[in-house]
Image 1 (tube, rainbow, N blue to C red):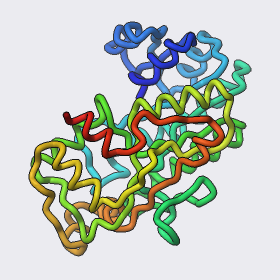
Image 2 (cartoon, one colour; image 1 turned 120 degrees about the horizontal axis):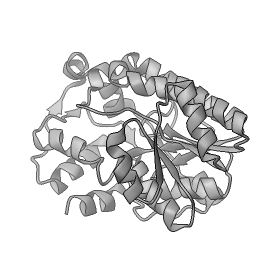
Image 3 (cartoon, one colour; image 1 turned 30 degrees about the vertical axis):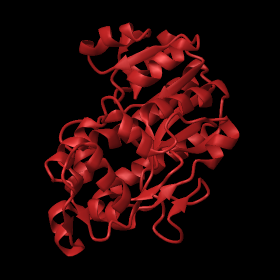
Image 4 (cartoon, one colour; image 1 turned 180 degrees about the vertical axis):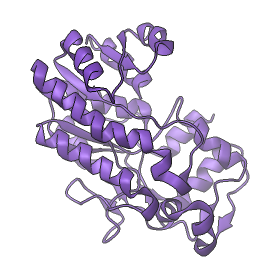
Length: 294
């Protein structure tokens, strides 16, 4: 996300200090036009020193640690570091913001398929998020934590849909091509997607307009898995996904994967378009998938 956001901010004349967890990426951030610093988001002193040195007008909280092979069966274990960054890391950033007089914070949240599993298939910001599948409860609690904390601090929370685009699509395409991403049940669960560049542009608007509250940052077409997964496979030159019954998928892939595939709820972007004036380059995942995989 940072690799797409920093150039947009720099192009609009902003001075950006970008953080990384190690020196290996400092040169990359500098090439993108940012002043680069090493910061440990889980160390209060490191965060406080970095924010004090940068003296920013605003802070964008994009800290995650979602790396390595996806593990939907053990989501809370896979997301363990990100869970800490969304709880402890959020606390450290907000404390540093208060200590240095930073008046505006924008934070990353998620709105891919985690709307409350009752009622319609497409949710607004007024609808609650789902408590989460059994193997992702801690992760879902961390999402609610960052949202509550940032809104309480009068900041903006951007619920990005399932991100795709440069650097984010490869991990999804590999299992699709290997037929390791089957369609579970009827594939009736809905998903909301957003291209990285569109997510970045929404973030720029939220910063420049000093937006407050929660915004769903998703494309115009929430869709059931039975539509987007075969389409993605076709664009990737893969065979049509296999179909696996729910009873078999649950012990193999875990509760989160089955929930996403069969009960997931998508999201509406009407508020972000209306209040931020957000315009999408990729209004549909169909266009985005086709361009990414051309």
